Length: 235
Image (tube, rainbow, N blue to C red; front, top):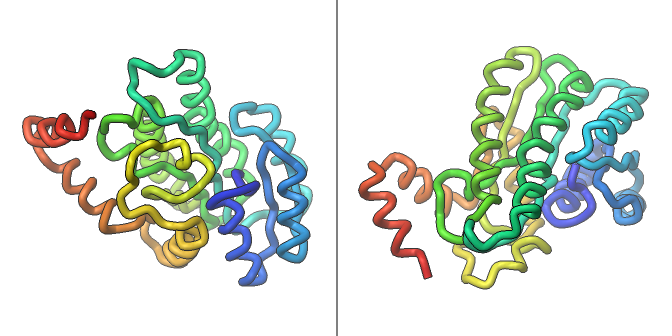
């Protein structure tokens, strides 16, 4: 899921260069067909992670081609800003796409995987710790991290649950940011890091480490210290 642009499209290109048989999915069909033609062919199945019936219909179609080695979703909705300033209806939509959508994807994708296959779900370094301007996006991704941790325990050993935690990547979504993004990388760089990370055995693929490791350190600090640091970030 989420293959129509950004990291998802670059990840499809990276795996196509390896000769992988791909199933591309997103809400918009036309960009998927363009990408499929570009990479030399792939099955295209449209779906919406916020719509369980849509996902199940896509899963039923994919199942006709046999079991998968891996199922990856990068679908997400993002809008920067302060928590108290976001439109409540849009906040609910962010939660539906990011958190509930991940839950939906996991439920329909798990039966499609061969034994030992990878179920790869995407969180974000924004979910590590509550930061200013993270608003509901960060909260939803924190929920995804918790969900993926639970799935890792529940689905083992039949399915290998993995988590991708990107930092700032220069995509259509992050162009909404009106602040300097630390350690920002390009989508093709992100895709390369994901492929390399998933080749290994670690649960979490996180990048770039000069950003992720500092945030992981903040997670370990007492609230009295970490919240003093985050308050300094408020404009």
